Amino acid sequence: MENKRSDLSKTINIVALTVVVGIMLVAAFVTDETSVQMSFWALVPPLIAIVLALITKEVYSSLFIGIIAGGLLYSGYSFEGTVNHVFSDGIISVLADSYNVGILVFLVILGILVSLMNRAGGSAAFGEWASGHIKTRVGAQLATVFLGVLIFIDDYFNCLTVGSVMRPVTDKHKISRAKLAYLIDATAAPICIIAPVSSWAAAVSGFVPGEENGIALFVSTIPYNFYALLTIAMMIALSVSKADFGPMAVHEKNAIRNDDLFTTPDRPYADASDEKVSSKGKVMDLVIPVVALVICCVIGMIYTGGFFEGESFIDSFANSDASVGLVIGSFFGLVITLILYLVRKVLTFKECMECIPEGFKSMVAPILILTFAWSLKAMTDSLGAKEFVAELVNGSAAGFMSLLPAIIFLIAVFLSFATGTSWGTFGILIPIVVSVFEGSDYTMMIISMSACMAGAVCGDHCSPISDTTIMSSAGAQCNHLNHVSTQLPYALSCAFVSCICYCIAGYAKNPVVPLIVGLAIMVGIAFVLKNGSKQAAESK
Image 1: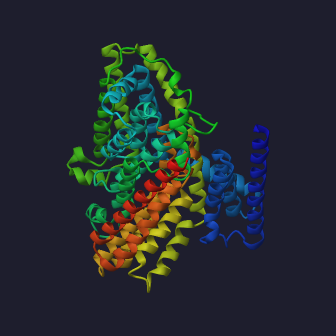
Image 2 (image 1 turned 30 degrees about the horizontal axis):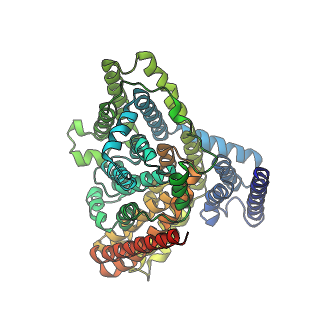
Image 3 (image 1 turned 180 degrees about the horizontal axis):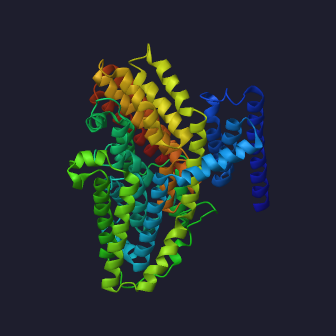
């Protein structure tokens, strides 16, 4: 049986690679070095990487092949030009970027913190405490959602913190790692994009051109951010109704019946809990580090935005450097954690130092995927993907004003899915939206901005090369492609309802009516799924 599966996997990989080679050969004959610029071909490399990843279930090679495809298109199939572009302008360039390096340092520090909390017994103690207070699987899932909503400062911070805190709790209630990864991912970006005090609010406000107040516009878009609001509602409905569907239902049934949280043979984090754990750990050994981390990260963010130089709290968040602020905050959170453990004699100094390489090793896979994902984005940028999409949006603006929010939503979904970056999508579409409606229709500008933000989060939510999706897999210690395949049906269902809401909003020009319609549809979906699961169970 295993040999048959292996042969099938090899066949699929060969077919997929053959298709990629065919696409690139077609591109070689029908394009030249200049014709690929600012055309649909600019989006071909990320599409190749995404399709290969979903077909072959192999992330690293799929991303790298997408990068190579981008290099070939950019250089006009020159060997030397491709090598230089892939490494000099791609991998080396993204690793030389100070913002990217800051994110990687932040991840490493968080990995060390998680290792420390586990070794100190804080995670185990919290799991024991929670098991006495959280009695059901529904309660464990709702607690995960609640914690994710509370940590709204930054999506990276959200993913890894919620994962490390809730993993022991969800494991005890036999919630699959795929379900945990979905709950983390569905609260990370969606809650950040409707939180006025977050790194995402700062990013969006920074993309608003002209004299418009970025933070004021951001706050105005919150009621119209249907994808974020409906995603949170969908999580709660699915948790309460116990109505999972698609691949997620397979993972959940396997976790309940067979006590197998991973389902698939590939489980890179299966042995992560085998490390030594201190018997002196208490709940405070997890709570204090997490609270310290939150407070220090907030202070770090506003520090980089000039809060201590006289700027207001909101303005300092709008002007903050999220990369530097999170590194500074996480570093001081790490220092406070080390002092706490040493003073309480939970861990020795040697044991604390042993957690540093352990924490780094736990982040190697996410760092590698992020590096390749950033490099792939560099390839699409060099091919003019931004300009291509900008022309596409400007061309669709005339004559479709009432439907423009829905059109922008769909374009943002596609662009964010293909490039794996929601912030990049903000940077492309928000200035266009503001320029189209500024001074003519303020309400439509707000709705269209919100559609852009919602679509970017949706595409980011679906994309296997998205950094937030990668971090959610790392936080839940879940196989990355398992997370992508189980989450996709949920995200697409919510995207479909959101698109309907934006069609209505373009005519109604208020958030109440479309949101009520959207929530009604979501409740109906949950009700149908619940009845369907009951009938399936009764027929067995």
